[in-house]
Image: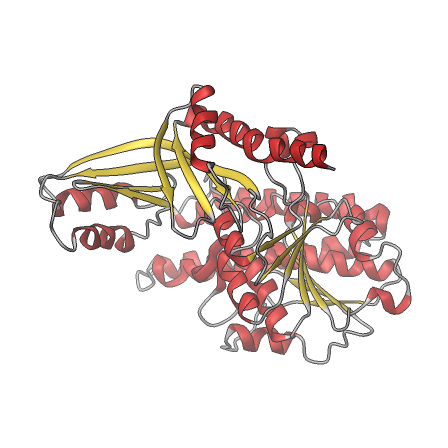
Amino acid sequence: MAGHTVEKIGGTSMSRFGEVMKNVIIGDRKGDELYQRIFVVSAYSGITNGLLENKKTGAPGVYGFFAKDDPSWRAALDRVLSDMIEYNHSFENIGLDVKDADAFITNRVDEIRVCLENLLSLHTFGHFRPADYLPATREFLAAVGEVHSAYNSTKILQANGVNARFVDLSGWKSTKSVTLEEAILDGFVGVDYASELPIVTGYVKFDSGIMRGFDRGYSEITFSKIAVLTEAVEGIIHKEFHLSTGDPKLMGVENVEVIGNTNFDIADQLSDMGMEAIHSKAAKEMESKDIPIRVKNAFDPEHPGTLISRDFVSPTPRVEMICGRNDLIGIEVHDPDMVGEPGYDYRLTRHLAEYHVNYIAKTTNANTITHFVPEKSKMLDECVESIQKEFPTADIRLVKLGIVSVIGSNMRIPGFLSRAASALYDAGINVHALDQTLRQVNIQFVVERQDFEEAQIVLHREFVEKNHHKTQENR
């Protein structure tokens, strides 16, 4: 393939860097074959949780404590540094100079500690509000995780005979105000793709702040921007699993299939379901530039993985994936005054927008509108209270639910809904709501949370496993 690729390695895979180096970065490559690739790396598993907050539970890390003016941030920072040093020592046997790596990250963390203490001192004068400095604090705390992993990776690769180059986009101590594009282009000045292997921080410092726009999804934004700005021929995301027809832990490894091809539209549907194939905003520019994205299993290097391209549509009707999320709240608004009133839904969704509550699905009839939103939405209670004030005659009910989505680039399967309903009925699963668009790239089943996993298994068996058996029989 002429030209270069931009490749991203996630945090879980980075934590097994010895295997990643063997499977993905070096493998059987020698000489010039090692180059014409750019690697964007995430922080090691657990490090960003410690620096910010736990992504799943919300438990505070350094930033979480600091933002609440809780002195526990100091002990939290000590724990993160200890975890970073522990990671350093785990890589000593693959070539990392532990003394150098420990000194590098200890110095960076110590300077962050001084910065945080100075911010607290400024705060005591009363002229600086938390809103003035907390966004920037979150930024530079996030950055150090990727700096740590990128620096280590560069040094390990150099020790293993690769001409790796550390590209630090974190803007450490830089006072320049630049755009995202300028920050990336500045970082790549003088890089020779033919003879150097850039190892790039997933975090980029720029004027409006990458965390403010994309929060924890920022490394995929970096990956995407680099691919577009450097005119890559392909973007590759290395994960610890294949992009499969369902969760192998749930369905059984023997029952799932790797999705060979799909398109950016389907990637958006997966993103909406919380599947981390590719951040939806990251994919947009690559889609517009017709740069395909390949999702590969870092520990199965010979497998071509899943290619996400702009124009792919399955030549035969099929289901590509069964997935979902079990963290939704249904905000049901029942109002007799709704029927025949133009703009009622507009007035309702204004509250969702104001309180930054994103909805995943919606159902409606003459006098009831239900939005299905993530339970973890930070201002959900305030949003519901605001809706009740504007619509005093409405009966508002909150229901904890799960949603299972059946997704495919061509799902015009005759009798699809009948088969799905029968399979769920036979399993004793009640469907509370359905959501489907005319484009028929997905259909969503809203179910009880206790039925969430079983609903996925049932639908996967009906539309993937049965189809696989038929295909085998016809051969």
